[in-house]
Amino acid sequence: MPSPCTSARDAALSVLRRLRSHGHTAYLAGGCVRDALLGLTPKDYDVATDATPDRVQSLFSQTAAVGAAFGVVLVYVPKPGRGRHTIEVATFRAEGAYTDGRRPDEVRFTTAEEDAKRRDFTVNGLFADPPPEDAPADTPDTIIDFVGGQADLAAGVLRAIGEPVERFGEDYLRMLRAVRFAARFGFEIEPRTAAAIREHAPKLDHIARERIGDEVRRMLMGKNPSHAVRLLNDLGLDDVIFRDTAQEVSIEALDRLSGEADYATRLTVWMKSRTPGCSPSQIRDSLALSNNEYQSYSETALLTYELISWEGDNDAARKRIASRPRWSQAMLKWEAEQEEPTRLERIKADVVALENDGIGLAPVPLVTGDDLIAMGLKPGPDFKTILDQAYDAQLEGRVTTKQEALDYARDHAS
Ligand code: ATP
Ligand code: MG
Image 1 (tube, rainbow, N blue to C red):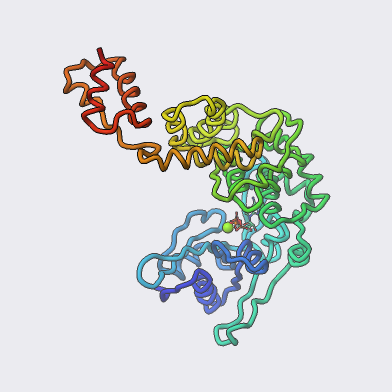
Image 2 (cartoon, rainbow, N blue to C red; image 1 turned 45 degrees about the vertical axis):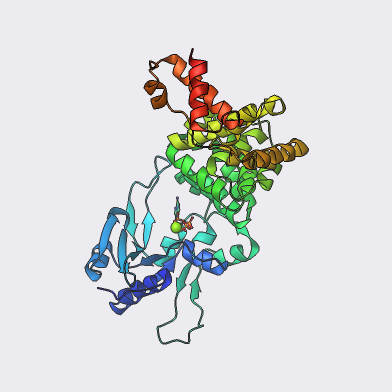
């Protein structure tokens, strides 16, 4: 049982040390090396080693062989107190031919260099060799770079490892990964890499919509969604994702969108900026949205139409609109779109006034269906109308007590 580790990096180092003390080569690999060199905190730590999956499982007591066929074993390292870190330990591997554009037909265990070369982008192909335990605390990791990843990281370039046309032909999802990483780090996509993506773009259609949707979700929720949207359009991927040709995409509104905006809201802003836009069901099917996301998307988009009549609406109607669950997200959308900024400011002021009118936007209803039944009314289609009218009266302060509200309902029932 490994001893408990506070940080994820220490947990990964404890795994490395154990592998090394048993004669193996082991490095930190991939995203964690890239992130650390960029001065970012890695989300998780991956280890690459020459130990086979069987060997890794025999050296650690808590493991899960999630992808043993691909050489991947999860090693669990306890945290102090409760919980555990999960370190992905992968055997150096090379991949055989890809015949379906999705996954290799076979894998073979091999050297660190070949393992670096099967990875997707140079900045993702780095290894780090941490200093021994007794080295001074600030000793940096030694970087092992078989692919020119350090130079590309320093220059802000996203470049496919090896021959780009081949690499995207092996796995079409890499085209979306390229956009995601370029957007996240504000990198340029190297010209031959970009040309290869344009060439293969139509084949993205062979990838499962769930996987496309996952990548798009991560891009839109990442730091530079507008950069991602611009790249998707420039590279011809947008047309394949939505199965229709975008004539124009502007990214200004996405640029202005608040970080508080959720995925559904980001999608509505994107679609508003795209000509032609796509229908909600087209978005749902293209990106395999969850039911929740789809509902949120539709409601956020629809609230724009509800707002059209605002100036002519009475207080009750305004309160009903402003207390809809998607109101604050829709507000972020309108703020980003800046279509009628002064009108939006007025609407916001109206809502603040309504919130503070002593009644509020969405008070608990004074009359309920049970009250109507107690009055001797029979449940039926009129029920909702009566309740709506009574609630409107309450929202506008025409009734203020339970008794007034019951009287009001009784009057309107007859
Ligand atoms: P993130 O922080 O988004 O997780 P990451 O670099 O860790 O970034 P992962 O998807 O977790 O990305 O993959 C880990 C590593 O595995 C990558 O850095 C890359 O070296 C390699 N890799 C992942 N997916 C692919 C792929 N489709 N083709 C080639 N190599 C890949
Ligand atoms: Mg990762």
